[in-house]
Amino acid sequence: MILFAVGGYRFAIPAADVDEIRETFAMKPFRPVPMAPQVKYTVTRAGREYLVVDTGQHLRLMPSKATRLLMLRSSAVAITADAIDRMTDVPAISALPSAFTGEERHWYRGLAVIGGDVVPVVSPDSFLEPARTARLQQARLGVQP
Amino acid sequence: MTAARRFVVFPLGRKRFALPAEVVAELAQPDRLQEFPHTTPLLTGVLVRRGHIIPVCDVAQRLVGRDAPARRFYLIANSDLVGSRQMIALPVTGECELVAADMREPAGELPPYVLGLLSLHEELIEVIKLESLMSMSALHGAPARLAAEVRV
Image (cartoon, rainbow over all chains, first blue to last red; front, side, top):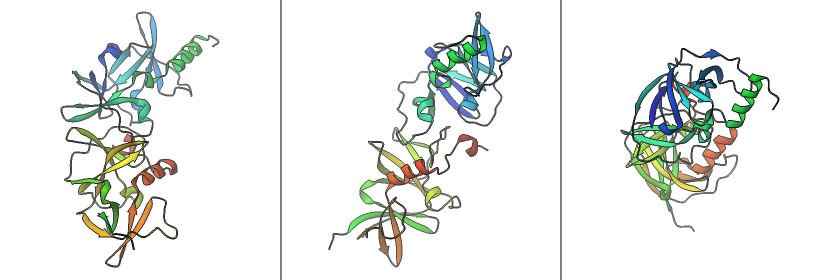
């Protein structure tokens, strides 16, 4: 697991879901669209354009200073992080208790207990679903869906 | 005449409420509340107790409003939520009491989460049905504890 911080909270993402961690300086502005207001930048990696999701906005946090990008493996999406904490082994992920019924059921794959701390494990596909990613990319390139 | 049932009476500020004793697992000392972003009304975070992750449901927001005094203990109850039985921690403001009493059917304009009423020493105490309280809050928009609100 990669542990990262956003807006004063710590999150985890499976290392297998991240291709690379980068700094943010190469981001280019992207005019937000109503279907994905949390996308405000793009970044190019190996000739492929990634849509950058503001993780804090996605999780409804107060604005914070992103310094790193986690380039996701399964889609052309990168997510922002204020800081990368470390990598660690997590023996088990607990299901999110069923009392949680809001958007977090979509955001999180489950909860990990790391050194006594409960850390949500984010679901990579929740940041920008593949269908929306494709529509945004098509719109950007002027391609009719 | 019905046999008296047992209830755990808990304070939330100046008012007291009750839960059927059979749903209460324990009264716990203050523990470290762990927060993370979510949008479920009434939930403020989770506790880790004996390896279990237990959601914390601040029912005081619904039962007595935002001005309830600081919560001092956690009453840990079993609840049937979304078809599964799980523990929920309720922050309460003082010591709890185990009582045996007859529960009266709710009468008049009481909210649907009131399971019944106990009459104790001239005090009328609402017995709470936790599942109804939580589902009602979800449906009728008790304020969700968004991280943005909590962390300001």
